[in-house]
Image (cartoon, rainbow, N blue to C red; front, side):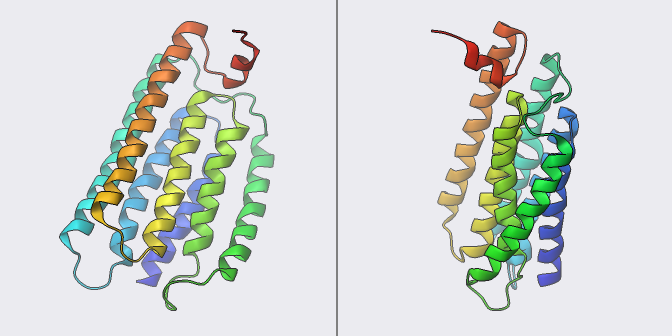
Length: 214
């Protein structure tokens, strides 16, 4: 089990680093989609023995929303926009990757200081989940395009889901689906907001909105 979980955690780390270094918005959306699909496999990899029905349903919903529905919404939105790249982020891509690697080292240090629910659990779970959360936050505050900030929110939620699936041993299905519903509504609200920003101002640079006066 640990080998599979370790591979998923390593993949999460690699996709986070890729998101920190990518400027093409379409590529960022697709990487986030692959990350969501892999994340949906984590509850199954953590399960020992037969897979219960509610766990299989939760994984299927997770993969469907994070790997298919959310990326589809963002890609459809991207087609309506004139921009295809994050040209001048607040933090450059090389610097972002360097900061990301430093953050991952810090997450490893923090993860080793936190006790795990089970002694035999993979040591990469907590560091990778924390690093995914940090990556999502960093993308949200260091990028100018509203669409990239929406991707950052998805990555942040992926990290929270990974941490919850790995550390919380028993979590009711309704709570799990409720969290996904919140993410579902947030993505659609952000999509509508980005569409209206682009229609009214002919750009999706969030930093330029700060110059508006009411």
